[in-house]
Length: 267
Figure (cartoon, rainbow, N blue to C red):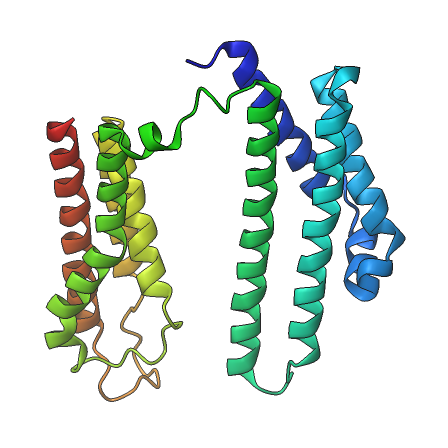
């Protein structure tokens, strides 16, 4: 088991990282780092600040070596991210909207990889500080029944559920004009919705699910209002669009609710 003091060390390390990356980094620093990359003085200052703040939050001079590791790895992770972004932006053609969207997606992916790498380093440093190598055995974690059940539930409501909904509603999508929608936004909305509903079911917060369903239904019902005299495409029908959206929404909600109930029963 992890004590409150040991858990507090991890929380303090994460707080130091969040403050360094998102609160104590002026826009001028970010702009200079993007422009100069590895040669930016603010990249070095930012990395030193990450280590110094971690040391302050740990409040233990004997932990200088873990702090040094945090500083060096922060510098390397941020530097490689800046290089990847610079190569990406150098190839960008500003006149092509499709390419601009791809660049935006890749930069978002770089950001996620950057933050995940920082968190992994902090977890490794935390395990070293609390001497957790012998206490956290990977085989025991991977074979934990509850963890496997939670993982299976969330994986099911992400891609498999989306694939099932797409197949079920494809019979009606051909009769609708969906070209004015943002690409893949519906898919991401569905995944976030099912993830949130599954989480609320596991937390036994069914009233919050009702509020979520009501809010989304109202927003989607007014998403495509009939406007007299508007230049809508000939194939457009507000009623058909609303029915199509509601079918997908209620199927998505049903899958998430059913998965959550089954997971709770199996627990």
